[in-house]
Image (cartoon, rainbow, N blue to C red; front, top):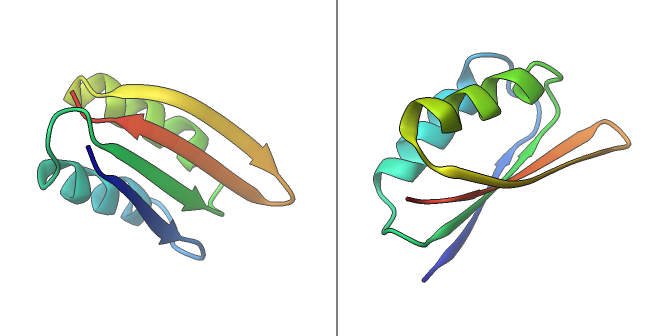
Length: 74
């Protein structure tokens, strides 16, 4: 299993979700993708992306203008 981190700071909707979706397509089952986002709309977009793809949103954290998501590839 591999861990990948995407720095999506400064990107606005829909770019963070689109880049996350592209990264997930290239990952193996069980891999972990960590997203670092500053756009507040990702709090809605990323959980919706996980519902759409079937991947597992393991955690979501917010602090000091940064949203961090951990997604496990199905």
